[in-house]
Length: 439
Length: 180
Image: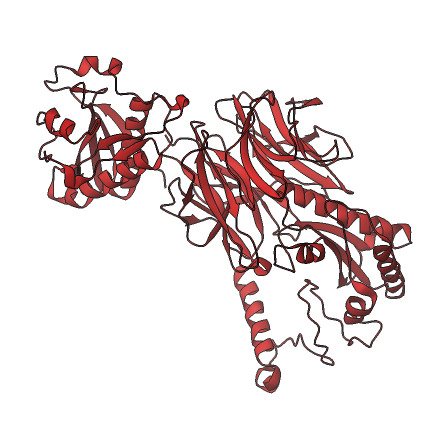
């Protein structure tokens, strides 16, 4: 399962403008809100060995799909091309790409030897006639070819937007089958774009809300394996799981890792009251962080681990609060009309994503950590459970359709509210948790 | 372990499929889940144990489900028992008192209008409201356990109040055996 990817800077050939590249005008400022996607071209990669023929087109297609899928880029149709790319090192005919209004050009080459696959690529700023950054090469296996395509696309995205990338990432979620009153659920993991699905559990026991560890090596989730909800930790590599310590006569659920991966913060329900606890995963020792007669649940750490955002109905309805990592008096941050739940701290630390219920509709929204600048990004019969992309630019969530035939799917939306789209999954899907960027 | 579970399930399926033709299957491993008078009970509520008697046998699980009433319903986002609910629970108390061999798991449920984890917590509140009432009427707390399924196990599937009202429930699911 582990795939090692080496990054090596290609020896720069005679490319006179390479050093100018970083200050070139080819730049998407995402924060301003992109309305018109940037046109780009990505011809099929050059196959540098006959065994690479298979991969040359597939790699380029995934790179295109990643970039265009952000809504920030638009592919210039290949039928419009004037130049064809036959050699990775041949000089770029900028005029040919300018003529078809491709502002960025991504070229690549693939070499396959046995089960080893290497990809190199370059990005060009067509209108200033210069390479953007320098060429890079990734080496891996043919089995991991999609990851290498994501790595290339990540580099292109990062160079043009100046943002951290997110394509080489995975999502753990709940795969759903069957009608609403006989639904079966099991854990699954996939690439962020829905490819490479792997099932992590069977569907004989109800499972809920998996959450990735900060390094993506483990998953916390809730299972009814014993007949009662308990928290399990699963090793993604070997798919071994173990149940965490729990107190007799209680239910535990809503787990999340601390940023150092050593602690789990979760809800424990007993005697009609749900509060937030934390547990040292190695020793199993736990401590209670809230003690109110109301429902306290859905805790999520700040990226620095110093604070916890959670939901509570202590005011009479679900609202969002922040407390210190050791508990203490929480501060309410949501004050709009409606109910607020499932808060999740963004990996950048600046925003809280949440689910809002108002006037019979559900929304995914974001607000600053002081509760200001609330923005609703979606609206439907039932949207819930946001999770952040590793760079904090995109939110994935569950959307459930209405009625007797209702079913759940995963959707993603940019934090600008644009580019809402469904993530393709086999069957129903819910409760996504986005991994960090893979190493 | 998994193999055993499968074998048992398979046996059950065969048993069900073979209602009209039992003799073919009555080997050593045969467990007839449908023994006793046919009740036609719909156990979609999840009662996992079929009693030996039919609905007319006041000591039967079927009687508890049908005549006593195995569930109470709740208002939106509430876990307070209403008059009707307390009447049903008074009946459950009498039945549990007379049938002291039974233990029970009280399952709390919510309708689909709510976030998943909140609904787990809300279902737990509802199940405990029932548990606390039964204990206050004299049922030993050691005979009762609670669990919440949140919005995960609806019995009605439309997205209207008529269905939601039936899904906001706490169901007393009987089990035979010693209290533990």
